[in-house]
Length: 500
Image 1 (cartoon, helix red, strand yellow):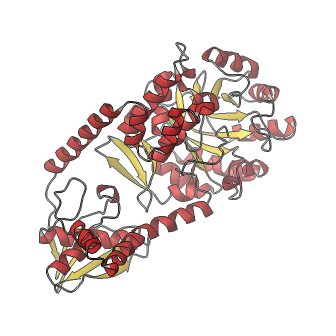
Image 2 (cartoon, helix red, strand yellow; image 1 turned 45 degrees about the vertical axis):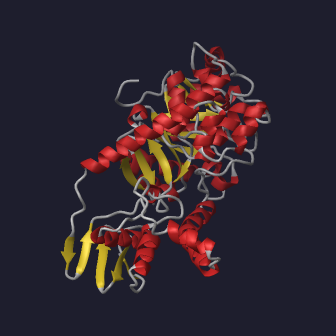
Image 3 (cartoon, one colour; image 1 turned 135 degrees about the horizontal axis):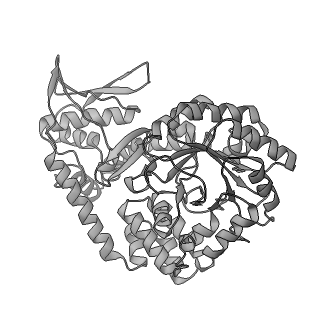
């Protein structure tokens, strides 16, 4: 589809699916013939806290939460074909998120059909169906506030009259299209799809209608897609489960063998360093009743993308990809300007941001600085914190040997502000900071080894406290996300209802 304003007529789309609609699956669907791909539903409260980061190593645009978790990752390949779906119950917050992502996506979609509690308890998803005034307020705010198309996805209401009244009201907000899952909010895939409702909606409005919900009974192959379109009278078709099970359903040359589809998916997951638990979850969904096969058991046992690559015989692809990514990191590092030291009174400052992904698990600049100060027989570093009132961001100053160091950049958490200050101190002193790929200084690892050899329980306890400090903020953020109904990446397990 050419760059420009997205058309919703006569398209086939990958539906938004929790834990499935991440970048690897979206790119796979495009490869196999999907015209448009939706990301998984992302909650406005969490997205509003994100900052936009251009990831030059992966050649992606990442929207990163304060805990450094990537909530949404996209790339140039899908820029004009990816639709950002959000969960929201607040017009102003919806607009904030839409404006954050609008330069990197083709359209904004509001989820008004998810029946799951994490969405409805916050007044989002299917809960909006009983509040048409709020639906109208959200959609009008978005339509007038962003430069790209706005759409929404609904479920049908108990009566046809109620459903038609709602979609006519939605049409008047100026949205570009409406997707209709032809089931009530209490119905599940085992219940028959109400094609007659979708057909009536398509006749009642002039905007494109996208039919959804036919994966289990009506759409099993690519040839069924057109049949489903005719049966519903819709302009377009959206597929969830059929695409999740085998994305080659979008190809008129398919279906392709599942082994090939899974390998193609895994290659994208490796290329874009997809979270291993998310990669594993998607592969298990593709395996379906084969999840207890020898391959399925190997997939379930895997903890990393490297181990998943072994299950599929892709070790060489994984190795080459890691080498390419590391070469790109090295080239970017060597081509960048050295950090410029600027004195602010008696404080040495640099424009440094702490990037957690640049360090191994449980290794941080603060840990390196503490170990170095002990080695040099100095008093341990002292951190002072300030908070900016307008956005509640944090900045820390570290004092070591009566000298002070600070990053000029503000962080969204106290922990990260202290880490950034430690990075400045280490770089001014010319001391290793523990980044991935950095030559081993022995500062931390040696002490860990010595502690174990000498049976130094106190040293082990201190190391554990470091790890607990590092995890504390992530745990707090995840707990808050659950309370807010955030539905990002989660460990494998439990049931899934992706076709919202």
